[in-house]
Structure formats: C-alpha cells, structure tokens
Image (cartoon, rainbow, N blue to C red; front, side, top):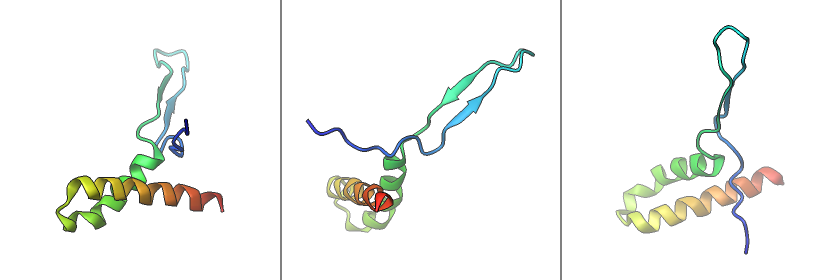
Length: 70
C-alpha cells in the first residue's frame, strides 16, 4: 500500500516550557498537501463539479510536493 506524501505540517507551532506556568504545546496544523490542495481548489471551483475539483486539487497538490523534490 502506498503511503500518501503529505509534505509534513504546513504551519507547525511549538511553545517551550520556561518554568513560569508556560507549558509545552505542539500544534502541527494542516499538512502541506492540504494547504496546496486548498490553494489549487480555488482555481478549480469555477467548474461547478465540486467532487471532481476536490480530486483535481489533491492531484495538483501531489504534483507540487513532487516538484519540490526535483
């Protein structure tokens, strides 16, 4: 089974514990793949075929992640 490359977190955030009541928090947020797909979907929504646009958006996101490796 192929694992989907998500590109990792798009907007990770860490808060360190400094000993003054501030606790360590890790938030990974959405994946880079989800972020790319959301951006790509904006260009596709004019088609009015939302299920097709959603699939195409993730195909474009996967292509963007692949291009980052090249």
